Length: 295
Ligand code: CO
Image 1 (cartoon, rainbow, N blue to C red):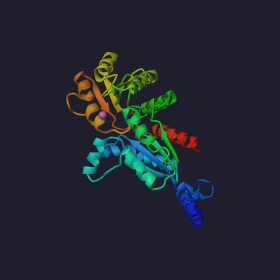
Image 2 (cartoon, rainbow, N blue to C red):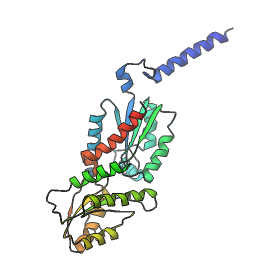
Image 3 (cartoon, rainbow, N blue to C red):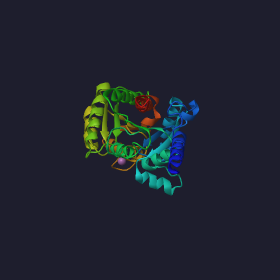
């Protein structure tokens, strides 16, 4: 006889807790209350190069303008970069920790936006980590990296070429450096990117640090093109370590040094793709797509 009231009491308490966890979920909560439960987690490889952070700051500013009222947080997928930053006293979470915190803080809609270039190894690892929070964070989505469709590639390639300084003459070559990974199927996206750059500009081409086309291939192409001057640009979210060392660095093995040794004049343009508005718009379009699907 005493059991029935206590069960009723318990059910009542459970309903109150549920209401407190999900304000607005049934349409009963205030507007601002439900908005404060939405978050975007921006996920990049990460960089420990202070100057390269500019690209992330720029992305964050544009994301804030496009998605006002939503919490913005960051996570870096590179554990090596995270360790370096933690040592320097400026720690950044990995995706798992960031998602756990968002869950803990009661966010009911979280959009994880990849700031990677292709759906490579880093993106696939991220997708697995996001999947662990399905059913825990009620509305959880994952936005695709920069190059998800042909249209994305076309927009990205045009925006990158538009960033080449006006002093470039039509006979000068433009060489883009992507990251690449010869052990991952996503590497083929870089061959597509190379083809698209060449279609848009007969003197533009793309190579990668760790995949195909490789440095030997692009340097041979430039030498046979007859160009005397070449503009070097990273095709990466930030102009970090690869851009500053492998692309434009003074070491004998850098692309700049190899091209100079072949008699070419080199003009490095050390800006990451995250510094260009039309490119950031592609990532943010992916984020908006995911949010509109979960509404
Ligand atoms: Co690398």
